Image (cartoon, rainbow over all chains, first blue to last red; front, side, top):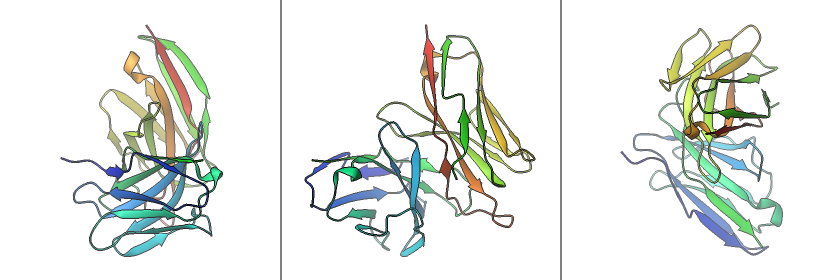
Amino acid sequence: NAGVMQNPRHLVRRRGQEARLRCSPMKGHSHVYWYRQLPEEGLKFMVYLQKENIIDESGMPKERFSAEFPKEGPSILRIQQVVRGDSAAYFCASSGLADSSYEQYFGPGTRLTVT
Amino acid sequence: QQPVQSPQAVILREGEDAVINCSSSKALYSVHWYRQKHGEAPVFLMILLKGGEQKGHEKISASFNEKKQQSSLYLTASQLSYSGTYFCGTAVNAGGTSYGKLTFGQGTILTVHP
């Protein structure tokens, strides 16, 4: 029973490069949430996606950040022209239903370091 | 606006009990509790729903006061494995439903010593 998978686990990018973070939800789950965690801080909601649809991107920075969840394949969080402030742990979580009475299970996270 | 957790940190000896509180200024649909160890993913512990239903861990209990929009997590007979940072995540009540976006508190660091 595979859990939520994320890759890469660690990613180092130089300022100005692009970062692509992947998330495969738990089997049977079609709802994906991305959260960002800065060092020594809590989790901040970024975006909620269902297959082929962005439902809520109210937590995404307006520029440089985008997310998708195609019909086939993992969800991808893309950060263009990274800056040092983007260094953080990025977690995705999945759920079986679009209702917050259901558990969200988190992946192991991708730790992005921008040099 | 994020929920407020208290205390910020707790230090226990094995076998002692602890209570962690989570308070919101908004009407809540559910409260989710997670434990995170350093460098790892948050691990689901418990969901509390308006109306009193609970789902989660057998050895951990929690409460949800709908009138005050507060939740408390009760850790009894603590074990070394309980050490970590505890987060509450709240889902706002949007007309009797809520689609799953969670707003997390700042965390409570729990340290259990032998």
